[in-house]
Length: 369
Ligand code: HEM
Image (cartoon, rainbow, N blue to C red; front, side, top):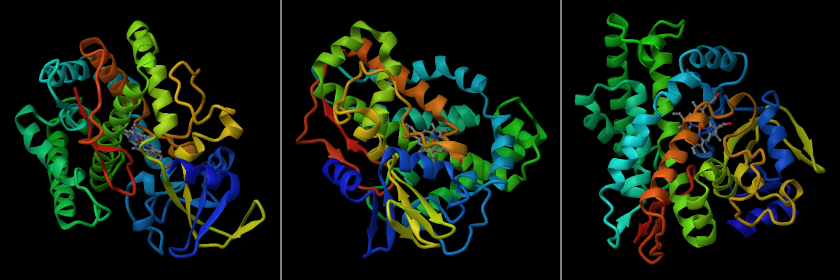
């Protein structure tokens, strides 16, 4: 899409798709301003184009809400989803990464996405949610069924819908158990807030939805990009303290959550175009990550030595990714572990495959040796 993104930024900063009736913004400043302006660009009708509804949605998912209901939800969950809870996961994440990589015999083929990248976040989320170890496998299978489907019908596919309902049922039951016998974990603490049971379950679901596929796809991109730039990979092996910075560059360059949908709440005027009230507007945050107006003439170059600049790949404003610190931690540890144990690899492009979904952008299989 890179040429299309550039064409949009340069020629159609307010693009209108007359076939499907949506607008799209792609310049850094425009996307940032729109993400920030929740009064003009509402999230309450949904944030995925295919799932936008004509009326405001009545869910407890904060990602699909505007202030003030968003403010209330975000404040309550932030007391429970703390920096401390995330940083406490570090040793566990390292253990998961090391055990997965132990299956990669040097010289042999390995599916970097299926055997490693996609495995980490689902295990970490199960840990974060406090799923008891004897129930882990069952929960991991449900998550895989719900989120590892190919195709545009991902969200509406009956198998996926059933798996999400099954997961909701499981989380409801876990919440009840933690309410009667709190053990100080995320769900025990959630149960003690002013959130309703439904809001707690929806928050648990949101963590799974937002935090599983995104991290796996990001790591797939890191694998591809570092193979394409062996000098940068060697530099990171020499300078492991720069791996966090490299994660930011992968996010800027190939952000896996490239589009956030909104609905215009009134007529909006931008670059001489009027966006009529009620129109769906797509905010292309990954296209914005390559905007020369923001990043200079080498915006389209991948360079892990680049000083991290604020990018929009975790969103911006009130909906800024709640899990950004966890995503950064998982990605840094995963890459640290790979670069330590398997410092060089070659991607087999003929066998590798992109995932075709309209939401999370990345690879389904990346075969490496
Ligand atoms: C929101 C990206 C990982 C939880 C967002 C948004 C983006 C994003 C762009 C803003 C959506 C909007 O404005 O409509 C990413 C990327 C990730 C990642 C690229 C990985 C590389 C995670 C993880 C979790 C998480 C690991 C938690 C386990 C959330 C939640 C929200 C959110 C709860 C909603 C925040 C709100 O509405 O206030 N994420 N995310 N994300 N993300 Fe992430």
